[in-house]
Image (cartoon, rainbow, N blue to C red; front, side, top):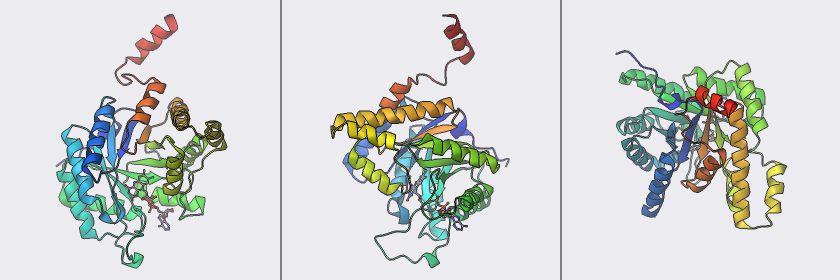
Length: 313
Ligand SMILES: Cc1cc2nc3c(=O)[nH]c(=O)nc-3n(C[C@H](O)[C@H](O)[C@H](O)COP(=O)(O)OP(=O)(O)OC[C@H]3O[C@@H](n4cnc5c(N)ncnc54)[C@H](O)[C@@H]3O)c2cc1C
């Protein structure tokens, strides 16, 4: 059977996508559903669903993927290979495909902290090994389509690799193994992203590089972000604005949303391939950013016609 390239994720540029995590409670599931309904009207290029390292949320991820695919939303389930055997990874892949997914975000994940773990027993050392494994598995399965594989990128560096030149080799290895696009860790400094994109292009990496954006909505969320996205810089400009809010919760949220809106606006002006919103399963901040950007039927307009109207009015 002839393989077709899976282009659904990037049939419109820039892509707009949202990330969710699988809810653990009925209340969480209800709130996720309402978030999805809120954001669905923006016709996201895709949504992605995270995966708990060690497989804790494996079944949950699959079930969210199934629900989203059922609603006609292209869904990218994440898969981390740390502390997994090849058989376990195959099982997860089979589950994702049967849930309707045609794309995977291939990650290493972080070592589990809450149980004994021996890295020497790992079947996969790095995400590049997982990408290679998925491509081989896909070949063996004779899938009638090509899976779209995304990998993680860290414009401000990843804590495990202090050598910033070596780090780019590691990134390139994932693409050489067959990954199709890069989605970055969240960042607040667009210069870091632009420089990273330039460094990728210098290395001959020409796949789409999607910018990961997460608005700060409270001081506690900022602290959590700093913990989870180890290495992300919080620029003085953002911190100064936070201080001016004098601890007022609503002002802090507004500042975070405005900051992210300005970031997105600059990225779009600089022809970013896509923007990926880390939503934390909440729609409010992302909706506000869309509103601030004035994105409206973005993909439906006849651009030449509209530019003519703007010039001539
Ligand atoms: C967009 C995005 C989504 C994410 N989703 C999830 C999720 O759903 N679940 C979750 O648990 N985590 C998730 N993470 C976090 C991610 O799993 C961790 O940041 C992890 O530490 C790195 O994963 P990776 O896929 O980049 O690993 P890798 O690409 O394997 O890189 C990890 C480190 O190893 C180094 N390295 C790679 N190859 C080599 C080599 N050959 N020799 C020596 N060093 C090497 C790299 O430079 C890097 O420092 C996500 C991160 C991002 C950016």
